[in-house]
Length: 279
Image (cartoon, rainbow, N blue to C red; front, side, top):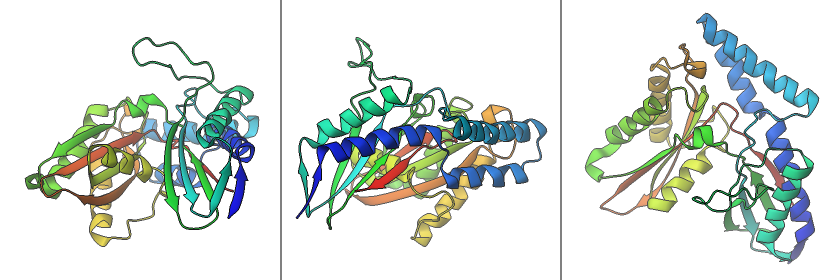
């Protein structure tokens, strides 16, 4: 049994909150560069240039990539041979509190969805925990801004809808979103599980490396088809037209009930922030 202290968890989460908000992931930066090279619409190309320049400035000046530094979503894979000394959830929230306060990040969380009082420290985090083999704790912090989160959707389709129904729902989601999620966007698509499970699948899909195809050839082909179809909409960077509406589509699928076909689309802006640490 390996012990990890609450203070170690707090320190890691605080650091990840700051890093995720300041540094564009390498795979996203590469996707933006490739999109810029392929973009022949002048205004779209100019916007992609600005996005890349913005990422450089954020890195060099230690400033956030975006003014919306998001709600902190924390994924924790806890090894079965790990003993956590202290209150795990409290340690995560203390890390978010420190990261957002010391890192001078915007605090956007309200304590109640209707009464709307700001918690003033961006807590609580949204926490997803899985037990996994081993003696390590893997923490991923994925701050999620709500310009894109508000464009996300979930549907409980019937099995008769099939793959075509899933494709139609994804495209409808993109077309409804338009310029609101600050495209070029990244799409995480969940298929299967149940009502709450499919939403988590979609969010986890956003953590996958851009450009890495699904290991199942069936879903890899669906990812390619959806990416091409989304880019054919012509929404383009910031909604001003062009080839690059979406940088990537990732699908995670899971078993489901014989009577259902749940599908969720978690929309992300181009930043798709996430940073990981292994303790």
